[in-house]
Image 1: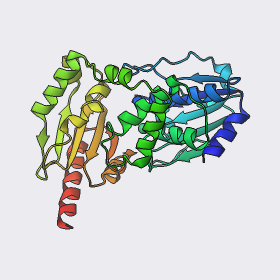
Image 2: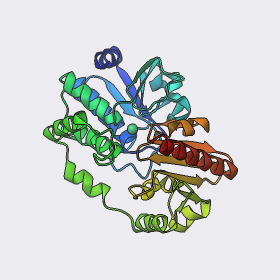
Image 3: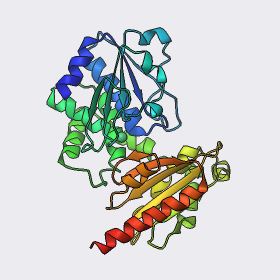
Image 4: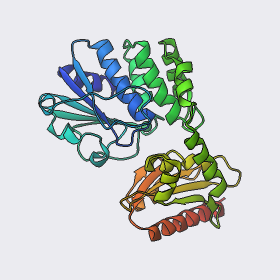
Amino acid sequence: MYKDILNKIEEYDVIVIHRHIQPDLDAIGSQLGLRGIIQNNYPDKSVYVVGDDSDINILGSMDEVSDDVFKNALSIVLDVAGSKRVSDARFEQASETMVIDHHKNGTDFADHFFSDSNQIATCQILTEMCIREDLTICSDTATYLYAGLVTDSGRFLYPMTNALTFECAAYLVKKGARVQEFYDGLYDEELNFKKLKGYFINNFKTTKQNVAYMKNTPDIKKRFNVSTFTVSRGMVNQMSGIHGIPVWANFTEDDDGLIYVEIRSKKTPVVEIAKKYGGGGHDLACGCTLSEWDDADKLLEDLDRLIERTQNNG
Ligand SMILES: [Mn+2]
């Protein structure tokens, strides 16, 4: 897989790197990390990073790219496989497209699809590629990749964290990843964000089977002056790590009425329920989008039934 990725990169002088909308640090880290990998190893190539800029983007900014750049370019899309969630749709104008991802979704557009759902982060895939293919990387590149590795593994806590995760972390630190500097940025929270966390901890509810949940209407984000994404993805894990709570779900209504759902689980795979409602993701961390609140209750009932069934099976 890694040789195939590099062979394709070698064919192109111009490469544009995309990732998903509403980026997390694995999306941004893998994007800036891959740009670094290409610049460090193929200095004659032109590499651009594109997509919406976001407040989560503490790592670096995106490039302004004109349409004609795409004509003879290879577009590489990271950390997402479905065309709808790719930021900057101009990959459609590229000569060829490639996806590198670690989610359990298939792709509906890529000419070349490299996906490994056993990998905890897209940054881990790219780091392993550097190790196995003996590539050169500078300390900036190492720092970007470290950022995605740390955050997508839940600070090395999630169950998919394994020997490879630590091998990659060790490699990146050896390559000069500025770990402390990154943590300083990561753990320096805004006051309204901290207060929103407190609001979540004090107000979540539970179902019969102890599924924790929050239903957030748009006034919450106004009250705490944050984005829908911050309430949704940013807060779901305020309900994690609680004794007796096997699954937790966060429902957040956006201004257009759509309800973003984030579902997390300690052990029982829940991704099939996300898929039932048109979403997807990982076994223990997934999501979907609903158009009405009635479906939120149905989804909670589905989670309850799943937990009940699992408990009865031992
Ligand atoms: Mn990821």
